Image 1 (cartoon, rainbow, N blue to C red):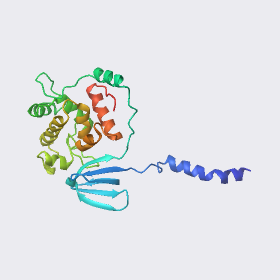
Image 2 (image 1 turned 90 degrees about the vertical axis):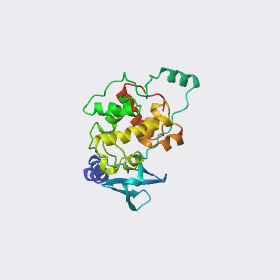
Image 3 (image 1 turned 135 degrees about the vertical axis):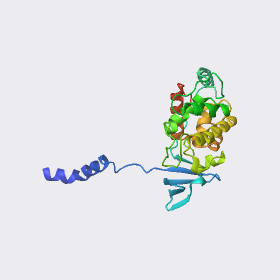
Image 4 (image 1 turned 135 degrees about the horizontal axis):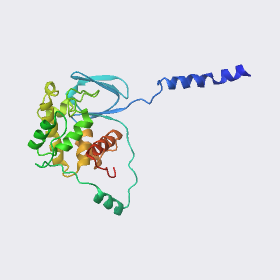
Amino acid sequence: MHRSWTLAFSPLLALGAFLALGHWAPARAELVILVDGNVMKAADFEAVGDQARVTLASGGRITLPIDRVDRVLDDEYTPPPPEPPPAAVAALEAAKPAMMLQFEESQKIPDGPYGPMIYEASRRHALNPQVVAALIHTESAGNPRAVSRKGARGLMQLMPATAERFGVHLEKLNDPKENLEAGIRYLSWLVEQFPNDLSKVLAAYNAGENAVWRYGGIPPYRETRDYVKRIYTTLGLTVGRM
């Protein structure tokens, strides 16, 4: 009787040990968005120097210059919640605290060693330095030499392709001044595309402006929605319906 129980359940015990050791996990899937607008579904993405190695979800691997990559996003779709009644939407919008996106002289210099630099760059490009500082806190925790697995670099975690769009080359992306210049110029441009809409500006910084235009708001990517929430929390704001 005892022997029979052991034989019957030992595969389950082995599976439990396998799971406990962390060998059972859902495969990571990512969207690799190229600067020409093409999108690849990837099982894995790795930035190595000035190259990007992409393991395709359909099989095979390709290597391409990192400056051909515009964005890399976790491919996690979050279904939108049911539409609330119009009156509830209006009440929610009215209750949302305002956050000015434009620069005003009364705005404070952000805390931290790069606060004065953030303030001056924000003033040049007419942006609220507190918004910039909150974004940097989320992106790099203020580390000018931060490099993500996806290839984003510096204080504002810019992809090389985005930095090139705004006048900064790859080799200068770890320079705090150059990184801030390109990142704040990009953020200022996004404010022009989405006037007075902080959530869309932040979503576009993370997922790209094309994704925000395509979905008419924050894209249904869990990564992007969590990103917007984290920055709102840093700013002391409450995110409305997403």
